[in-house]
Image (cartoon, rainbow, N blue to C red; front, side, top):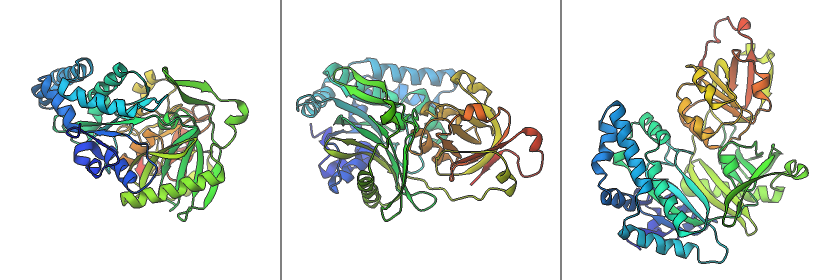
Length: 442
């Protein structure tokens, strides 16, 4: 087992070149005494051995060197083979041994998470581009999840992302994390540094997937750098994701009274603020985290480098126009024509420099980010996966803007302040003066 798989708790697990930055960062937090779920890191060498066992080396290289349809066929062949073909026996044996150790405690559900060698690095987080599988029980589902994590390296959205960073998928590999599921009462994300020099946490009821996927508007908790709770703004957590034993994740509607209550009390918020600051100290730079709270306390699930934007002062002319407030992604100021989209089938309407106004800012929208001048969404928070991708690209984004698709007119000129979390707009007839052409600043 030690050839390919090591426990998170050993020093060897902090080797990002073998286990990917996601696993290595978690291992570093674990070694520093911070609360991290136990588990195992599967070396990227296991992926390479599987590729070799299936005879896919030339196919992998062809996905980058070939042109047009031929390249797409190579990538599809890689994805399908990794997803469908059995795991090589020499790789499967240690995988099953580690999985059985994770699942040994009664009533445990398991988690399989990607930890690609190229993700969770400064400037290339790959947030939401790969796969995680929660609530696994049987060994057949476990093997499928591992194969799916490997295959995700060749998914269309991952390949698009790699292309924008001039990365060849054949030159990298996919490591994997195996952990028990945290049966979260509440979960979310956090930023250890904002443009205002503060810290920020998002929180929602249940599993953190609703926050990561931008499906709810989470609570927003702001801290001073000293860890003092400055504000707790309750979000709109109308539904939650929980894990049902043997049936994976299940969504349910929140009771009205609980939906309007903060997910964390002030003492819990202060504790999480301390963990956020300690995580920054361990990683050695501003960080973005994912966390969960169960009956035993807080658990840190992920820590990646954070890009921080500077505050931009808007032109005076914008200050007299209607405005809406939401959760800022934390970077950029930009203007552009509003393109209001309420269904993914309408994304073809989005033109260069437009401000996309939509309902849910999910990672599935990542492919339009290189095109747009900004994003406004009715749901989501500052720590969603799409917000992370926007920070990388310097794209202003404001999430959790209630009723945005109805109130912002399609075709209007829009200004998006991704630091302050403010969206302003004016009708096209009002925007003919100089200085309001579409484009990003900051």
